[in-house]
Length: 442
Image (cartoon, rainbow, N blue to C red; front, side, top):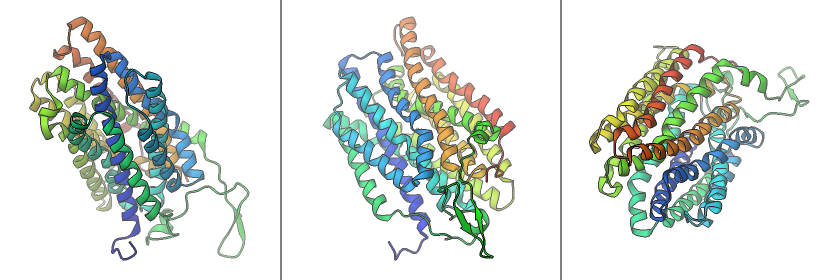
């Protein structure tokens, strides 16, 4: 690795990209494997929704603690620990829909473990990546989620068909262990300054807080005190932070509902077989991968070429992404063919990913030193969206099934997709009103 020509921060970004890819292979994999096992066992839609949403309870509980741990211990160490924990859980737990208690505990443990990942990643990236590379670096890292979901949708249904649902857990655990090995071997904390703009921006400096009474040397040989307290009150009372929180909630509500229930929509709503759909079922997530990176590159271009300010760039991309996505979501149940459903879901998820170049990078704009903390706060809201959206969708479908006798009619699914569509419109206006691209936390 020492002979590589590209800077070490590129390797760090690449490894974080792979980490999000593996995590979402796990999430999509559980949805696919459990759906097959639960349908075979005669589990109803409401009960399926409860199990599918259990992950997000654990995930929500560990977001803010994850940001705190990354701040106190270091994002690199916390990220490794989280991978080891969730991989071990996947390897050890049997997939039996009738053993509800074991599944609930296992999904809670996986959720808690994975809840540390994104706050840790944001802490690591805030340390390693200079401001003019942040949009594309964060977009590349988060696009791993979508590539992982696409790969999961493409490969895992066949793995379930030929090797059974339990094989998905073993494959996911193996991927987690392999990534952990590479992260342990190659990831390091950043040098004091790897980039010429480091001193001016704070990039490259350790983001770990110092003790409240710690003294640091200054150029004239004297000392000065450095405070270490995390400004919790200012963070929680900040309107720009809440603009991020609201948009994170909406993004993940739409994403988690589609990620967990799109397989059911294809099979019960459109009477399609996931195996027979071939590679087309991965297109919505692959589109997210493409649009996420387009958004990152476009944002950095608009900012570095001074076409738009950071604030205007974030608002522009967030608004375009969420408004177009809202239209596609509300149109989704109208299309009754495989091609139409794939097109609408691809547009919806693709433009949601484009919008991440707005709100999702904004953590590092407004609070680079506390990026992990702010990410933990906003991702808690995103996780609550998973709990609410996934579980409520199961109940909505159970009620629709009672009213329409089955789930094959568009009316059965209209409310499911209209809710995230309206949330997208609301969130885009909140971001326009209250967000900023300026640094507001020192």
